[in-house]
Amino acid sequence: MLNLKEIIQQADANHVAIGHFNISNLEALWGIFEAAQELKVPVIIGLSEGERKFVGVKTAVALVKSLRDEFDYPIFINADHSYSFESVKEAVDAGFDAVIFDGAQLPLEENIITTKKCVDYAKSVNPNILVEAEMGYIGTSSKMLDEVPEGVSADTLTKPEEAKRFVEETGVDLFSPSVGNIHGMLKKTKNPELNIQRIQEIREASGVPLVLHGGSGITDENFSQAIKVGISTIHINTEIRKAYKQALDESLKNNPEEIAPYRILKPSREAVKEVVKKRLKLFNNI
Image 1 (tube, rainbow, N blue to C red):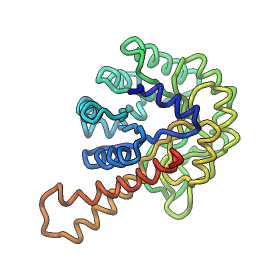
Image 2: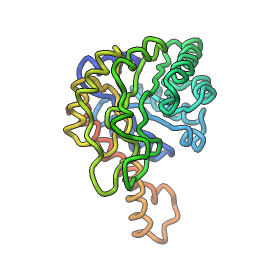
Image 3: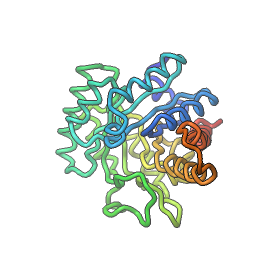
Image 4: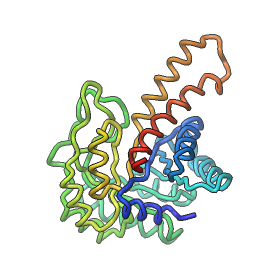
């Protein structure tokens, strides 16, 4: 089985993208895994700091790696959006396959210094751990939004020359830019269009595979364009949460006397699976 770095490099070369989907419970994990299995494509499971706290840092690793071992399947785990060196260190020590330091709201110099510290530590523990970092603010919450997050504008788009410097000085394996994407989904309209030209410029300048955060709410056409010019991994979370909750609401409404959690939650698992399957088909040109 190829490791995560090799899989992402392969995706980059073939102009497809690896799907990255966040979880905070077991039924979402199974929904994502079953979707990937049916399509025979690799997949990344992500947990933010809040999700890791809820599930358990070591428990999350054990769950994902147990699926990888039992089914001999390329499913990997990523510590999504870690906002401190200590949080990154905790995930590295627990055995995550990849970690993200999110210093997008920090001054550039401080972001570089802390990211480099994270890279050095992760590689000292395990050279195969992938380290990703972010530059350019896109918001922080995966939820339904009334408007574009405060502080996100054309002025916060990542500049290619700064991306080049950032990657060279930190040694990150993956780079996450601000290219018109936002965290969360707008309630009353579609999310902003991606700046495809900027993605291509950043990919060429940085020299490493790019990660698109805030994938929920982006149009299929935008996704396909972004993948062609340099996006190799795409994060989806809000779409999953929305589908999960809608299915749960219906399940509780239609089965008011049911008390078995596995029966109540089965529709949510299926709803997650359908969202993930649709996205993986698009990302992998299936």
